[in-house]
Image 1 (cartoon, helix red, strand yellow):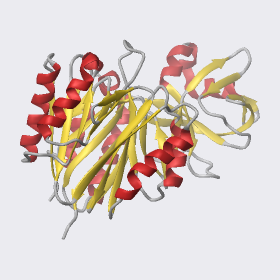
Image 2 (cartoon, one colour):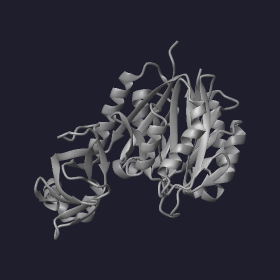
Image 3 (cartoon, helix red, strand yellow):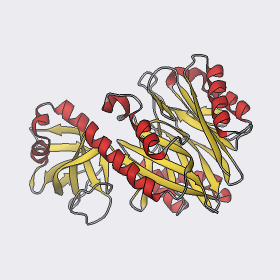
Image 4 (cartoon, helix red, strand yellow):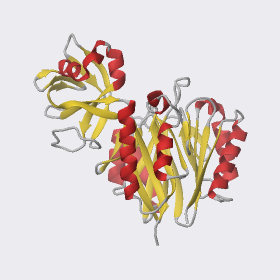
Length: 393
């Protein structure tokens, strides 16, 4: 049987915090030694990350420890988004194995990075698998690397996210064993014989109809439906257009995941940022390269709509579960949390309401990795939940 537990600490002393969180996780799991552990810690502990990892490994009696820095951490119903905070998840049991990996030097190496990850975990694939990928958000070429990983490890589910920080450091860090590094990717393959259930919820809802790209250059949208792109954008956002800086913080572009789609449907689009707009030139700049003939839409990041999508996602998820989860991982965008909902612990409270007291650990991410449609994708403004359950005999 798979057993798991989660613990957290906010005490300033890093060694004591790591020991406290790990002890709580082991106690909840009913384990004296873990198969593997995940650790997420805020930048307040930055100078002590190596000490934290050594302490977690020693207390949990496992060398298989991975994790990363996070602007905030998630442990059960606790979402701690500032100051000293770390979360530790431990798990064990005959039905689950852990294989950690670490790959340095990311820029310009998407395909080699994917190949190195695959080479590290391929010999350990089991009947059931989950590849957890934790990356330096500032250097990871997410879309290209995930595409290459999909070819290297077909049919292996992938989840995870980009390490984050509060803006005080300018770097994000990943952890593996006792190694701490920026410009790297780390993670863990969970393999064995278990049930895996994945879901994602997005904080953005379509506003207005879909539009066809009729003129574009590089990452500049020039025309939509034969009209100046800025004109179509301003029409969609309404009064928000009067304050462009505010509009770009709440309105984004939706890209359908299915070729030939003519509408923007819930759960069937990726969100990409608008990085600039010019009323004078009639154009908008986006964080991807659109092609003539593509369909795009506009979406709004909104607390109430995000809440409703999360509730609907959890309702759908609960009907798919065949047995109670042993544990879960939650990767939640830094643009969600208290900054969006104006209350702490929002998403975790709903997860508890729908799933019960499942040990959940995670962090607030620079980007999210999750399944959308038939592919693993780079997600933004989303919460990605991965649940591991004991397989019914």
